Length: 183
Image (cartoon, rainbow, N blue to C red; front, side, top):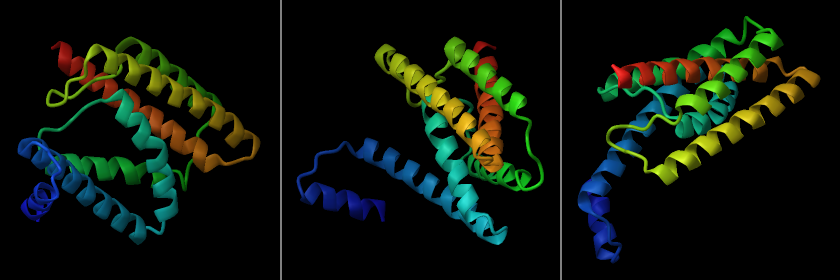
C-alpha cells in the first residue's frame, strides 16, 4: 500500500525522499493501529467520548515535552493504549483532590523548565526547535491550569482527573527519559 501511494506521489510530481516517505508511513501506521486498538477498547468499556477528551489533553502536551520511547513498536502501542485507557477508567471511580492536581501541575511545569523537551534519537531537535517546544509545552501547561480553574468552578471532575493523569504520565515519562539519557 505504501509503495502504491509513493508511486502516485511521484507521478504527480510531488518530490519527497523515499526514506523520509517510508518513515512517515511507518509513523502513520503505528498511530493508526494505536488509535484503532485504543478506541476499540474504549467502545468495549463505553468510554469513547471520555477517551477522546483524554487524548485531546494528552497528545499535544506529549508532542511538545517529548519523553520516553520504547524501541519495540508493539510494546509502544500496548503501553500507549494502556496509558490512554486506564486514566479514563480510573476517573469513573476516583475524584482527585484539586490541590494534588495543582501540585502535579506545578511539578510538571518545573520539570518542563528544567529538562523538557526530550527529543527522540531518531528525530533530534535543533536549538531553535528545543526553545519552541519548551515554550509551547509551558503554554499548554498554563492553559491546563486555567482549565483546572474552570473545571473546578463548573464541577467537571472528569476533566480535573484527566489533567491529573496527564500530569502524572508526563512527569513519569520525562523523568524516565532524563534518567535514561544521563546514565
